[in-house]
Image: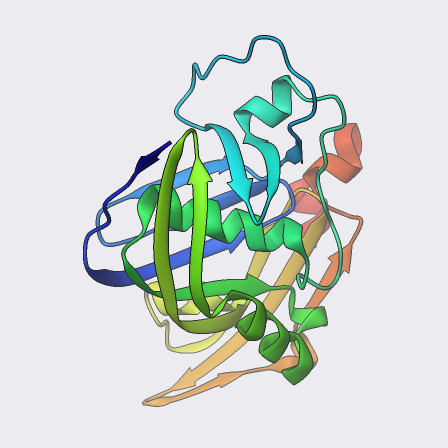
Length: 217
């Protein structure tokens, strides 16, 4: 196992979904499958894709990303209302190992319907601090210095901060997020009563019944 070297400090935005994990820094935009599974007994495992991950963390070995999607005995996707779980923690830690910094200020997400002070603080407690994780034989130790938990869908407002009332729809794999924001001059409001999350209605869940226009209506 080798030791990896990370650059000093930066901000990492991570959308750690049940189906895929999206990572954005000032330098990169990446997207890899969130699917994971235990490493188990293996005879020949090759790393052939940049998102093939063999992970060692806290005494356990996993496969993740493209490798878990195509070569895993019991691959797992997790679609739960709460993200206080090792599954989502690992998505965040793999993302930082691959694309982050020695000291990280991160933004993660949780469904609007699940957002609460307890969910926010729970995620912060699980993620904030020092972590050592090995991916594909490279061990890195890094710090998560700050954690912000953003409501899914509504965070899209900050792309261009539109004036007036704006509605957003986020078509996930197994959830659909809907959010409403209102900006009047310099005052920005998230309209909770006109925002929601629909579980079990995403693109994968609906399969051939998926109709974006019908869902939007």
